[in-house]
Image: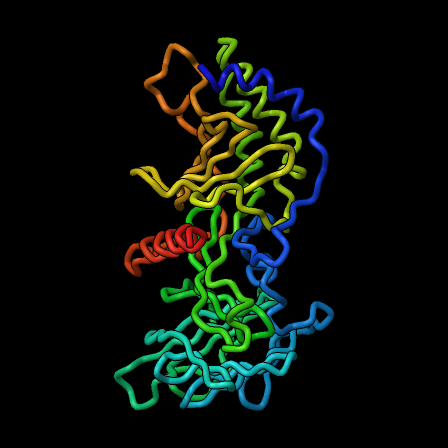
Length: 366
């Protein structure tokens, strides 16, 4: 099979792979970034600014006269008409009682009629629950920073509660830029899809409408585990696994955390990696989306990772006597990441995320 033969020639290539840093084209807005293990630092991982919070500013989550202040200095002010976030950068972001997010310059995004969870650049989370049937629509506000939680608003009134941790049933957004760039965040396995919902008009041209975050650590770890699962003595399989092992050993070089990638082809979601490797997101077919790793000029991917909550890595079948089988073995389950961001069918989040990816692909065809 073509893949088995190619794996033999791949090993010398890997031995010579230089640690060249990856850079996007000059002037181009990056559309994909490789991030570390999980999405806890989603705003920083996205490469879209610090969210209006300097990295040197860190304290404790504490009460204030009208709400609370996050460790990074974001002031959360709660009133019956809405919840205002004032960032150290000076940006003000208001979640109004009707569910719209507003900037002082007049732009608005949403709506989120049931409320929204805002993820900030210091790792804090602000959860606002709205109800449309009550005179006071702001029902609950909870602020989370690490293990500490405060509730400055409960059942439509001021409060000083220490709530219990619970799951969030609404939308998640990441607050990027200087505190005024807001993106809805939905995970498909190790992928986090960001869809812009709010930006100041003056920043719109320089701010991507969508961004894809690839959580690279579970991908690399799956290659290490895969080696132990494929011990078939057939030469073609041994060669393929040797190539997988070589990629896993150079995972930090081939998939450098924080790298933004350059498009390899205009009409496909395919990007350049270090050392002649390419990464593609295939949106077609019943198994889509699939993240694929290609080496050199091979027409077949070495590895395919499914993108869903139960993601797994699959070795493209190298056996010449099994041409009718796409994959070899049953797959290697990926570590679960970004668990609370995984797409929920009841909110149609998977369809939303796929539509964003389709838009990303179409956008480069113009």
